[in-house]
Image (cartoon, rainbow, N blue to C red):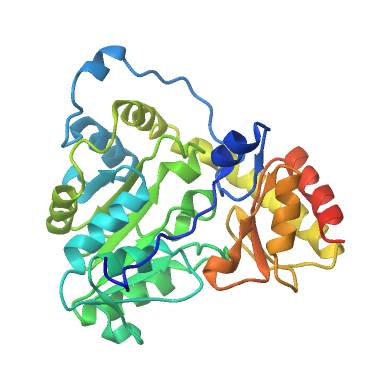
Length: 332
């Protein structure tokens, strides 16, 4: 194996692994998912389990098209948003290609681009692909639609592509989305994982020019969206309006967490997402270990290049109170 082969990206959401190791219930603040997702009845017909899925996902793409007012040939689907990041990079960054992103941000852009053989550009105008996470992970900052369109115009002027990752936008401010913008130099990524709090389902989807979408669909593994994920997603796309209630709760609880953290002398960064980045003023490894001993997981942001920061998801008031009480003990 080549010595410079990239290592796997670090992610949060290790609650299942921790529960299996300790046989204790874990409160997972490292996974930034919706604390109050829409509840609805859904069903996967057992008869569908004896058949391969429709690899063109005609009905599923139809449901997405109706929810977002897009054509089905402008939609791709995958086994989580990361599969689509990998597939996108494999068709846009092969060969002597360059990509650009601002740090800190989600580690999969860099990894997937490098796996495709691309190199990182020093300047935006040198890049074939620009990755922008909006709102950004782990900072929670959000860019306006005008700012995002400025990125798009710069990339278009160089015949490049803007990759807009909007995985958290439904829990933040959907009004700034680019999902309704049709441009051959734009790809927009979304995820049900965050919005509907179903990381176990693994379902991501994206919007782009039909030519690019066809290449991504060809590049992804066949039948990568299983029957259970498809059945859940079909129903979820009829409940997008219900996410407005989730957003209200997130704002309320985020403000409460922010005030509690500041009263402890901590420095949470301003956020418009369903998580907070907290500057702790020292290496956070010991804090994370102490919290883990109390069966509470937070995201150690060392992998983002922020060794003195943790990221916490916004959860329900009861859960948030438990976290604050544990932090008081673990910060001593």
